[in-house]
Length: 301
Image (cartoon, rainbow, N blue to C red; front, side, top):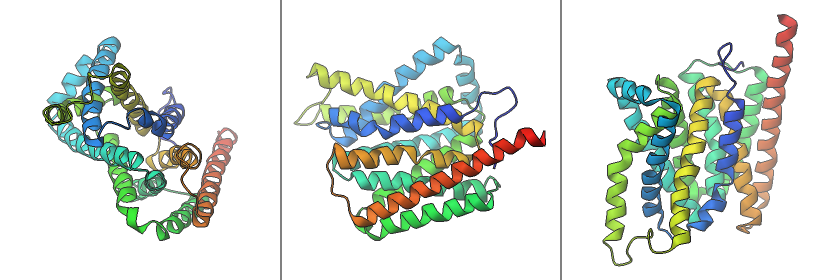
């Protein structure tokens, strides 16, 4: 399979790598805001993502791109749908990490690349080589091993995989840049986020923001750790084949998996060890096939 980069256009490889590394270490950040209820935190996350996006839009001179996207009815409808999907994904992920379901969150993003491959081949007519299909089969076997021992938390894993897989597909289909698109998505979600923040502030416990300086700064940082990887991911999604991009996502759950063992100290079952080995074998086979095909290009030229 070949990437969809255009001649003279920077590759999406480094953008994808940066996004997944940030997402992989995100649980460490969530430890800083563990005292904030997940629903409230997602509200603040949206609120602080929007001003960061606006500042970057103004700095890069992309305000006309935002206006053009808002004037495009189809693009706006797609961004409304993608904003709902990413909000659901954020909430389930934050809840899973704060509830100690680290491996369920990791499993969701192990399944997600298989969802990406399925969407890429069925809807975008992308093609896989035989070795890449073998890699998909290996990864599927690894996921099946995990599924057999994680039925009670399967809803977490499947919600994460399907919501983010569909989100990436939608973002690939609209002629809106990564930054303008995220800015509009955040603006669409802002009324809901503001309502959530107000509801918690009016409650008996009060708002988590504004009472403790360190916690408040950590909440504001949520806008940065939200905007930056999503911008990188949207950039990569527009420059790479979607099924190829899917396999890079194994970086993030692998880091989360290791954090579950070390920082969160969750017990590791034999089935999880077997699954981990199968999935990494799939990654190795897929990447090796991509590298082999790229080496052939200069010779063919």
